[in-house]
Length: 341
Ligand code: NAD
Ligand code: UDP
Ligand code: UDP
Image 1 (cartoon, protein in one colour):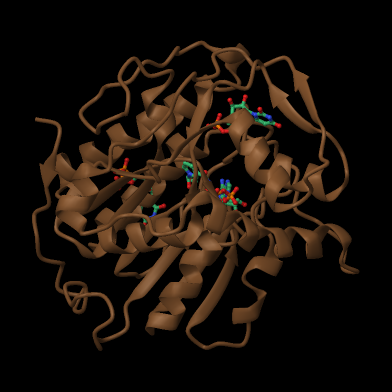
Image 2: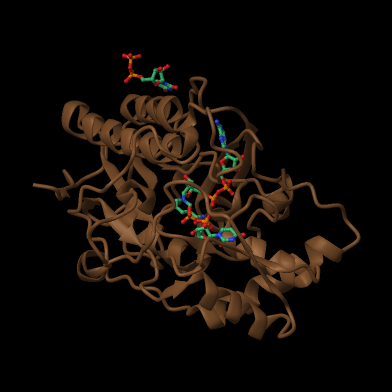
C-alpha cells in the first residue's frame, strides 16, 4: 500500500479547512516555512488573497525579503527570521513546510530536510495542525521507470554526486518517512507533494538551476551552458500551477504522495531553443561537463492528482517562460541591487 487516505476531520481548533477553495470561510492561521523563497512567496500571495493569516518562517538562506515585502503592514501577515533546525512554538491550523536548501549550490551538508522537518512535525503534533511536506521528484533519483508514478520507489545513490546530490535526495526521502511516521504513529494530518522542476518570477537568479541559468545568460548576452550532451530531459512547471496544486492538496482529503509537475517533457537542448526563441535568437550554446549522477529523464505521471485533486497544470513552457523574463530583466538590470544569495 503506497497510498494513504487521510484521517479526515481537523482538530477542534481547525474550523474552516474543509470548505472548498474560493468559497467564503473563516480565515485560517497558516505558517509557511521557506515563505520568503521562490515557491513560498507565491503561495503566501494566494493565501493572503484568500483571507487567511500567514506567518512566514524563513532564515533567508536563499529567500529574500523583497519576495514578501508587499505584505508588510498587512495585519494578517507576519515574518519571522528563524532557522527551522531550531524548535519553534506557534499556534496555527496549517503548516506548509517548504524550508529547504533547494538548489545544488546550497544543499551540501545541511540538516534542514531532516531536523527542520522533524521540528515542524513536532509543532503539528502539539497544536493539531495539518502538515504539508514539499518533497521532490528527486526522490525518484535517476529513474528506471518513465514517466514516474507515485508508487515507484526510486533509484537514488545514497553516497552519490560527491555528497552533492544525494544529501538532497536522501534528505527529502527521510522527510517523507518522518512525515508518514508522524501520521501513522501520532495521528498527525499530513500531505505529501512531490514537486517536479518549477520555474517562474522570483526564482533565484544565480543558484545554478537550468531555467534560471539559461534565462539570465540569454539576458546577459552570455552563452547558454548546456551540461553533457543536452539530451537529458526534464518537465518544467510554471509556479502558479504548482501553488494551485499545493493548496488543493492541503484542502483535500488525501495524504498522497502526489506528483505535482507539468508532463510536458523537454531535452535541455530543446529548452535552450525555447529560451532563444523567447529572449534572443542569437544566443549561443556552450557545452560543459555534466555533474555526476545527473538523472537522464524526468517526467511526472499526474494521473493521481488529476483524479483525486482535480488538478492539472494550465501553463505551457512557451507561455510561462515569457512571464519570468520581465522579472529577471528587472532584477538583473534594474536599479535596485540583486541580493538573492
Ligand atoms: P527557495 O530556495 O526559493 O525557497 C526555500 C526557502 O527556504 C528559502 O526562502 C530559504 O531561505 C528557506 N530556508 C532554507 N533553509 C531554511 C531553514 N533551515 N530555516 C528556515 N528557512 C529556510 O526554493 P523553492 O524553489 O521555493 O523551493 C521550495 C520547496 O519546494 C523546497 O522544499 C524544495 O525542495 C521544493 N521543491 C522545489 C522545486 C523547484 O523546482 N523549485 C522542485 C522540487 C521541490
Ligand atoms: N517541536 C517544535 N515545536 C513544537 C513542538 C515540538 O519545534 O511546538 C520540536 C521539538 O523540539 C522536537 C521535535 O519538534 O525537537 C519533535 O517533537 P516531538 O514532540 O514529536 O518529539 P519529542 O520532543 O517528544 O522527542
Ligand atoms: N543543466 C544544464 N545547464 C545549466 C544547469 C543545469 O544543462 O546551466 C542541466 C542539468 O545537468 C540537469 C538539468 O539541466 O540535467 C536540470 O538541472 P536543474 O539543476 O535545474 O534541476 P534538477 O537536476 O534538480 O532536476
